[in-house]
Image 1: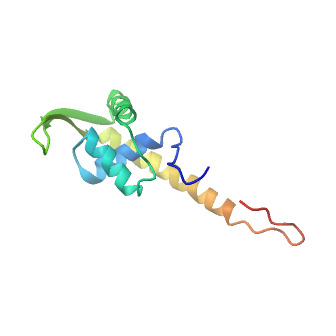
Image 2: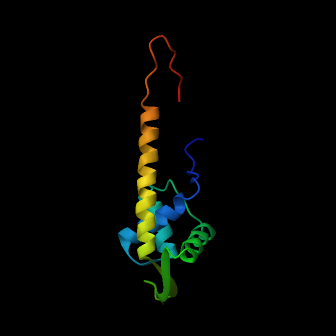
Image 3: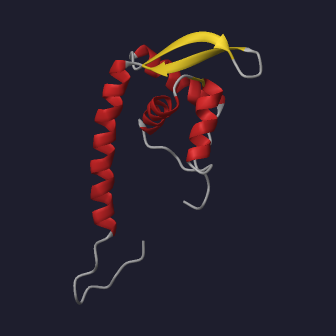
Length: 121
């Protein structure tokens, strides 16, 4: 794994979309994708099919809602917003990921026992 774009773990894109909508308010799909790319420092690059598959999935689960509107460049676009159940799901998922990353931080902070050779990660 070099410095190429990150491959997302299952479920992380949906969480990123929910967090983006919670933080930014209503956005169209292109705006959500660009914001995720911006916040990730371009480590996560999203194509149209990937972001829209996530949006359809989240809307089917009732975690986001959509309505048609006019974009900044005066085009018809579907705007998405997070729902109450989406906020609840975001809070649950955020707690899970914080626990998981805390465990991984502790794992990577381990030091070798005396007499044990340290392996390179």
